[in-house]
Image 1 (cartoon, helix red, strand yellow):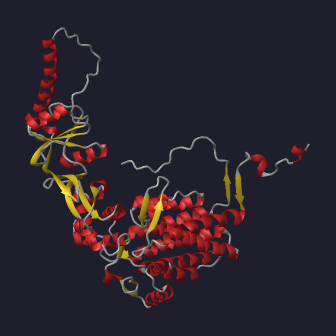
Image 2 (cartoon, rainbow, N blue to C red):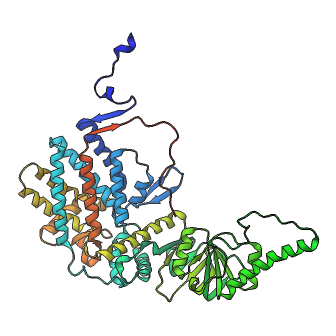
Image 3 (tube, one colour):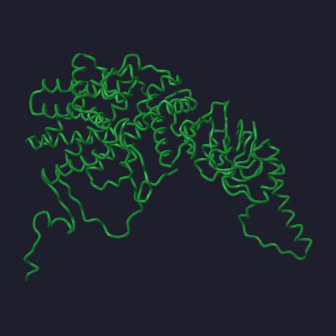
Length: 544
């Protein structure tokens, strides 16, 4: 009879056994806030130019050494459902703008930490949410006022203007090297920028990472850089037409099965000869069409290669489908499915194809200088793989910033000048509010202090002094005073040329506030028992 005395009751009787159910303030809300605080503590130390690097080893044993928050939160397999919301907010920011993921995650964590204090004081989460929503609306209004005059119309093909707006995004990843990197990125972007800048495609700026040398050896190539050698003996060709074949350049078995009956030796000899003649005929047809370069998407057969050499054709092999597409975009060729004579319209054109040796690796550089070239490549050099990966992330951020500035080029003061101004104005706004949400608004204002505080701490400066002097400057009306990290003093940002894009800040703060409110709205967590059986393959594999 003992078994019957332990009847489950309440919620236990409703759900399957093995579930977990957390409810109420301490269990659900504060636990969620705690998880998010942990996540933002991780990313926070990587904020800004002096941000520390993190070493993340993911589930596939790949090592990342980076201070790029988007990469960090992607590779940490975050398990907690509430912290996952922050990760998603960071991802959204990374995909929307390409920069400011760290700001999103850290700021949301800060908002939640302040919300926790308010909850402990006895405010109800829904009052905090109302206050936060009012505050973010006000913040967005103030952001509009802080926009630098005359920055809304910009020439996206002017290298200096582009570099000016890109510097902050690149410096936060590679501090001290932004003066080398920014002109490179800006030039690559300007080369690939179409007539209508709003249609700028990020995929058109490629990055080729080659070990060896140093950052100062990095260069920019109009065209595409392939990481492999040419197949034949011809290594260099100028001003040539190109034919692209997807299926590989080789003799293939026919679709239908056939049996050939051979009676005597002559027939056998003739049979072998016809194969040769057939291949030669095909290659000759390509050569006659005017093509000097053959690009193959698959294997190149021995016999085909022999005839290619005889007709002085250069042979390249590109096994990746994506690379092949980009190659076709660069040269304007049409990829043909099987080896046949290409029509003149299907041929592409290159200025030069050459195999060069860079740092011990052989690369094929396909240049296309004249036409409205649509692909350009930044060749990065560095001493280790992890440095190169980090440089690549900086370039990606720069390119994404370029895309953002093509859509909206307004800029606001960087280096925490904007944040202090927002904090000051929101504080004033909260005094005018009546009701309990004024506490939430003033906490929202305080959350902005995290940014100058973190920037100062990461640079090893005294945060309290810095924040006090920033407030003092802003109170006397110098709205553009920010933090000069190199000298550790407060300076006018416009003299330092540190500008952030308005659109970056706008989305980062918006996503952070949305994520924080979403998490505060949760009052119960109900987790079903995890299903047994084989685990699904982990997502996050690269498509490229």
